[in-house]
Image 1 (cartoon, helix red, strand yellow):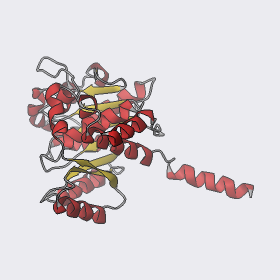
Image 2 (cartoon, rainbow, N blue to C red):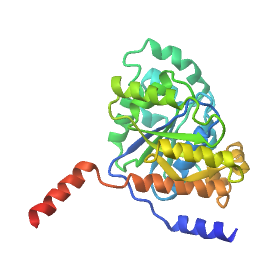
Image 3 (cartoon, rainbow, N blue to C red):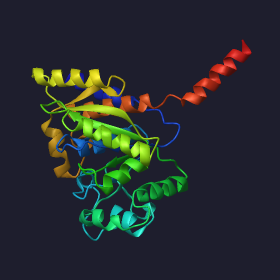
Length: 297
């Protein structure tokens, strides 16, 4: 407990660097139950707690991300459905998260369940979220630093919209048997989106979740993922935790529900690593700086 208290204090005092531009990440894994929504809301909460401005877009009809962020999403609420299907401005539906300053949510309602069918006949059906998000970000006087998009565990038009709107993909992978099952198909789908709809899309981050340090299996899965994706996999892992599972039923992330828990600290460390990885200036700026240095020597 003393060690966790020191870790929490260090995290509380840490201010994460702002990215050079708004980073838009889709959190995806076509395998269900891997901690996708849990990762979305807790990474978002951790980034906001460290002083950044973060928007979560809930594209899952179940609305679990909205629930965890304490944002109303009953059927009468104007939601992301109205943005995608009716063309409502994104600014009209965004709500602040009551627990954490700087954290906002575009909620999902049950209406979203029928949107897959309704989107089929609409013009520019794959790019409706990107257009709405681009317009919203351009209007903001105080820039949003991170947008995290939580999507359903299937490749329908909602997930396609999420991939087209983002530049980065964050993949949570659970440290359990069959962890890599379906991952090759997910990567093929990302490549297909990249070729046909969004050439900037790439897998930037992989987070290992549900890690059980008592089992050899968790270590083996972690080693296998790191060997396949050494540059994308974050150093830290998120342990299996009852507190992480309990938090959404209280309308909270684990970050506010139990700040001292191992899950809360792990997600805050993961968010810090994610932010610090993205803080380096773009490659062209690095090249220009090198050329200026050469010119002066």
